[in-house]
Image (cartoon, rainbow, N blue to C red; front, side):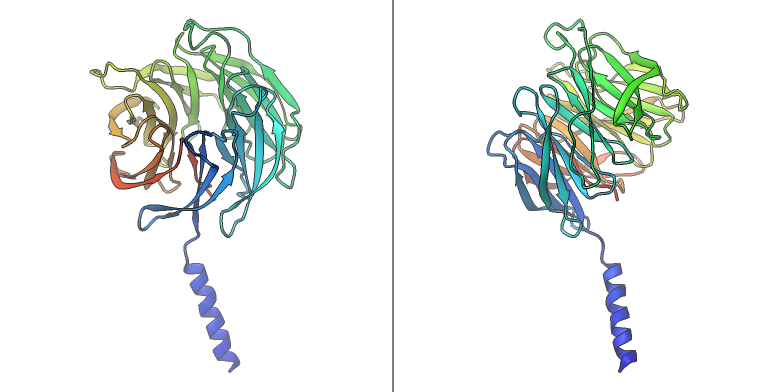
Length: 373
């Protein structure tokens, strides 16, 4: 009898191990058109579908999200929170993926639009677009945020009088080695480079403190190649991408291609580029275009340089952020103005995309993320 019970328990354990872990996705939104705040979905990889399991009330436009490296906490900027902006923390139930609100802190600047967490999970970096500043907040062991320990205020302007009348810090991206953070300022056409002290939650200018791109281009989002040798910058205003090589010791960037066009030559409409990601293999780069409403697709050469492969319509209006799933099989696009997330199957050999016919309704969806655990 004991042997039978033991065999049954073993079978149950093996069955549990065989069950695929839930794949949870989080969607940030603007507080318009009935948005409830942050939406939680479960992704069915076999069916290629998303199923909503929760919405978390936040009326202050939790537009951009980041997950703690432990997978236990989620953070949102509150872009519409008062004059100084805000940041919120949430606990993640690892069994269900559902969120529970923990606390909030001031972002110390207007219009926070981007948040990132260092690889140790001890520090959060918030980009204040309206305030033109970077704010650094410590993260406690329980996942809650402490008040800011460091801020860096940019000063100056760019040649585009409408978009670059003052600094507009748009993103802060951690280097693969966690030693540096790269801060894109749309208003100054500049990437600021800071050395990071994650224990003290402070930053200081790196030995080479910044690099510049073509005047009027408007730096927005930034990403690293999986090798860490190259990095890529969205130039929002000119709908282009800049390519850099990176010195891992000093953090310095060297521009090797600037203002690489992402739009078809015959497109004459209004457009601004938004998000940028590289597939897990490091072979293809994707950049979203709002106005043309498509993802530009590039192949990446051994020298880091780009070759245009094509464009994929996003089946929606105003694609903001998008997600390449950790396995590189699917791309999910947040279409802000059509209130949808559209799902595409990805050909891992060619980099090209096929619309699956699947989409979900999310009011003013602007950010979609999936923990890579």
